Length: 389
Image 1 (cartoon, one colour):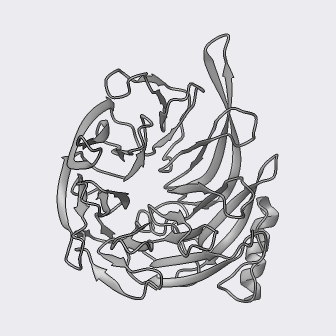
Image 2 (cartoon, helix red, strand yellow):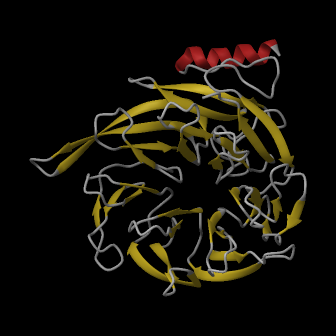
Image 3 (cartoon, helix red, strand yellow):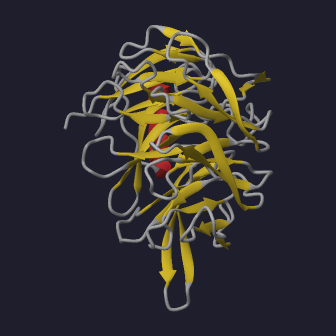
């Protein structure tokens, strides 16, 4: 235990401020403490939280099972995703009532089959029927964002080797889903990484890819998107986050390296006179690898979002740089000048925990604090937020 604490302290001395670990390994000292609860040892890498059975309580959905809230002790089969070696072809859990029947379905897809699909909630304990949305090629993971601001999310898979497409759910005259999608191709091969946000302050949702950003047109599903090759983000995280990091009124970009070391934010300096943009790269953390996914959420109730991320355990089956390093789950606090790193969980396999490829931050137990639910090849775990507001 002493060696472990010393190692964590050493990392903090090198370049990050880390929350102190309490003697109880399930909770952590500092601004926010968490209670760690293991839900299952399944090795699916994606997890969502939504009300499956319409009992007004959040349930957990991950891979081939859903876990009934609020205790999550009872679980029910959804239908197993196909397995390829260490991977299940199930790289997202996006809740959406696709067919408008009042029960929440979810959208997923995977690298190997290259199929974007939705799984239909049967409304009972039966298995969930899988429906094809489109064959899109290798899917790194998929995300949803309300591109046009109509209150219904669009579906955007990250397809590094195939064209970047937006899928839009068709609605009926009552505004309910019909089970069908339209699609629009807006760019060629985007590479590894995908993000969303207003880059040029025109109240439209632009799309970020590793080599630059795509400006949303006035009619995003009809007009062409303009590409700006402003940066090279490498094997970028999904998502790449867009937000005003340094609170100067201009949106910046936060990106992790999904298959290597590094977590950075890019400070945005628009040059209005020349219609150009300068991006200044700042290091957040250079000592951990496989920052494949991340979220922004207010964990401590101060009205400011914290950056939540961690290591995707065995992202490339241990072949990535840092693939055999300790696992970690962290949040980062902005202090007005830089980010400080706070440890939620850290250690070797079986002790520490990573993020998987798609995790969820939500108030799972309705206590007013946002909890963190993470899946991965290292199991399914809930971190209950013990912050008092």
